[in-house]
Length: 449
Image (cartoon, rainbow, N blue to C red; front, top):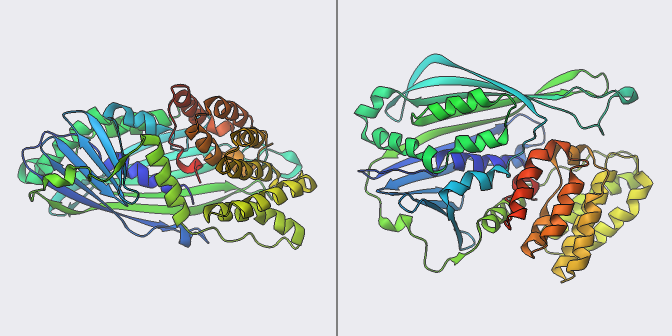
């Protein structure tokens, strides 16, 4: 469930950073809870996540899960602070959406549509009258060619359905509740400085999401609660029938709202923190969160010990790398590549080629052999693909590490190789390519493990 990491950053983009010319200090706290109905995913679901937004004068600050974001509205800049690693990075506010767009799983080949309706339901949330609106988004994801039904028959697309209930403050609450009045102004300034709607537009251009994007853009009311449920209709290889599966629910709600005074120190960078680049800070956060989640359960035994070993070697190499054992990582990676030719028709063959070379490249780079790391990255990109690589794309850990060494040309060549198997990732590869050509490092999101 590496995709859950993306929800953290999406919530931060939607709820946290904005601009406001406020006459009073104001604080709002959100709590987000997650629930999954899929078997075996309990270890991947985080506990309740808290985010706090505080605003004072021409400054705003958000804290969430170890990440603090400070917005200076006068200077129109954003500073992201990694409290755990004592680092911070500052970028112009206008660049935020563009830099984050490539961190989300998108693809020009997706087909989606959205509809909305006012339900007529009302409720009082934290003393604020609220009205509910419902959005229904359906997305069809083509199944890669490597996955097919009996006789090579193409499988039908994976269909995803998201139902979103959004509760916003009623218009009269703006007049009666001081904190809501201040926060409504905050929401209006948010579009000018960060424009998360622009970010959503970049993620799904021309695929039917425009009504939802337009609805969000025109809705300046304060958001008090959102509930999202997502279900998928998965193709069945045996009979080409589709089976419905409930996957995940999230609920975000205001749990605190006040106009108590806020100390100036809340908007200041601690003096002993070290400045870094925006991409390095965000990618570091993604890697750290990925290492913190539980690992997936082992695949069921195939009854063939050699095949089971082949299936496990990629995970073993990844675990050894995260534990800091370069020698063991290289050993598993070499064993994986040596075993791969025996299973050239197996679904895991493409994963083995890519991951084996990726981990050997990471080890080589750690040992100072940049030339070997470059070669391994290009060999990884020559994989024939797999159900996982073709759908979700490759692990960009080695590409990211080489970009940090200034190896832009090699990484651009690797992106080109990835296009041959990762057709669904065309939009992300375009965004990453543009950033690398500009001399920047992308935020790789779920593709950085």
